[in-house]
Image: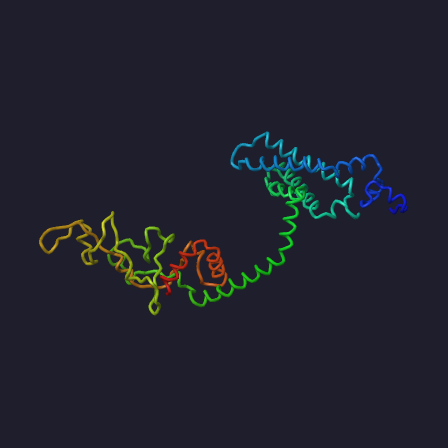
Amino acid sequence: MALPLQEEEQLPYPTLAPVVFCRLKQTTRLRNLCLQVAHSPWLDYVSVLIIVLNCVNLSIYEPGGMKNTTQEILEVLVFVYFVVEMLIKMVALGAFGYKGSYLSNNWYKLDFIINCGELLDIMFEIFDIHLQFCRVLSPLRLISRVPSMLHVVTVLLGTVPMLANVMALCISVIQIFAVVGVQLWAGQLRNRCFLGEDIPTKYNVSLSPYYMTEYEEKLPFICSRDGKSGMQHCQDVPPFHNNGTTCSLAAHQYSSAVNGVVSTGAGASVNACVNWNIFYNVCRPGDHNPYMGAISFDNFAYSWITIFQVVTLEGWAEIMFYTMDAYS
């Protein structure tokens, strides 16, 4: 709805829409009051205080504890306050379709999305579905109400395209090394020392098919196959231990060891046990990779994840030592 130029110049807020919602002029009592409230600095001051209180309320929330009535009431009051604030600004500025309208501002769009999300959270809670996703985002309202913070965030968002280029470069580098990892170390981290013969059947003992440390697959013994120059071989498997005793007997002395006494050459007897670990002498690929299969170079996807973990410097030393043990 267009107004004469002279009348438009006399408007209290010339930069805003003269009429919103078909009939609310700037001089209409309701809209004029909303305009005064929306342009008052005290509205932002109160909003910042409410946001801080809401952050405190979120910080003391205990997911596994009993519901606190005070916290629930405060959450509802915060939600009602920001819905009322949104409605006041919509009446003052217009919802959309006008210059300077509420939804023409990206930060107001964020407020609108958060309010709608919190409304959905409340509706879902009626059916005992607790999402609370948008309540976690509610502190973001603070950005648009603190000018210095808004300026910093705007500058950071302006650097996103450049950061995207840096990220693309990092991904490309990781992909290159992931391909190299597959070519060099595919299957190497599955190397284990297996039994060279059917010892469990031959001597009626219970042994694992391949050598495992006391930490099992949490700290696997990875060996180097023939033709590789790895740091660890099956001959390096430590002796078998039984009740704190280091076993040293050969398998043919098993029957004596079962009785707990073995004769020595001098006629005396000692307690001893058979060193079964000496039979773990065949290095070949098994079925398991370290960290429950999460770390390997068996295919491009797992290799990419492994290289990414190395780049983050989280657990890279273990991956390096495993590779040294198996390959070089």
